[in-house]
Image 1 (tube, rainbow, N blue to C red):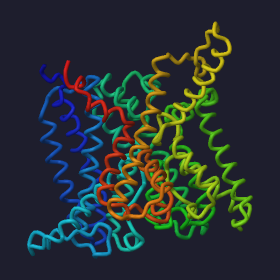
Image 2 (image 1 turned 90 degrees about the vertical axis):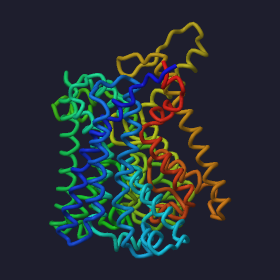
Image 3 (image 1 turned 180 degrees about the horizontal axis):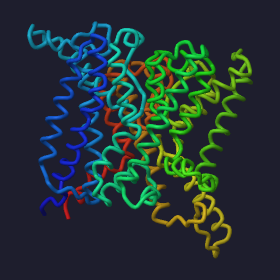
Length: 525
């Protein structure tokens, strides 16, 4: 049989996205020029993304995306943007000090004939791709050491923040905006990301929907930056200068987690940490519900079972952590500090933001295991968060209760409902299948992390491997042990970091758009 998927259309639309990636890349380019820093890494990245984007765009004049073409575009777009995003990190490593995580002795290898530099160059390539993919997928896991935070250029650090903001919702909305005439294709892309069909109902045209989502996203980001910098101007957050305010606004709303500070949110005052909480929560709430709130419709959010479930899960998890910390005899913090650190880190992990108000790796086993379980929850569908998502767990809970009820009452007919709507059985089965598949992949990644660490002589405990695998695949960011909130992933073998890059990509676009490409029937009629 001949291949039936119109891959040229998918590649063409991906090319359009890559072409426009030059716009955000121009921001750190301008900053580098102003600060007198190396602008070459960004100039090269802009040239590459424009040339490649225009070349791909010309592959097809057909702008209609079918179901399979939409899957293909989602997968290759996220991968392509991650590769382009890695170029500044990789090229910045050419002039970096050997202490830098991005150090890249490519010049010595090519011009001085030092083959021993090969593994270092390969490591720099993997690390650059790791940092870029982690940012784009809003994972927030880093390979940067404390030295890097102090010595990287302002332009590189800004790009590190920007790529997270783009990954939160920007890339998706730009793609939909460019597909203004593709009602079906554009809506499919949004549904792939948000897992909600309500997005079609916002407006009759997907272009207007994209503008609404984009406006909300920008508006919340600006509000966050103004709040953070306002605290600085009032003398309440001395470290929250303009750069930090913008950087943390970009990543709070994107629920991403990269911070220009090696101590993450712990580098700031308590009031600054409290001010980050509402913006992490806003990023984790379904943007469709936020749109209704902006329109003055408060009844729709009140009726949302998922919103109640999401907020209730946060309340229960935070209460558990705070109680465990308070009971723990080794914890000597005040009541306010205990409540703040417990609530902040639960919200950060559960919303997949990945900030840390303190080194929670120093907590006792009970509190750490609650945080580990929070990694598997995630925010609401249609938000910037990752992980399994609250909606799926809500449907699973209702489905399990329905099964128990019908076991006791075999003749009863009891459909699963979300609000007034009945959830069809196919959807329930798909959700159960998705969660099972996610857990299987998580365990397989854990086995690989342990086996590869043993092969390379790296010491990794079972809990460290479990937490790092969950954090990477579910796009959380920090984990425990060597991947703790005040540490980084540089200690894992190069092969492990490369596999983690793939897993961040697979997890961010929710598995199916990648795995479906491996099915022969996908490519043939």
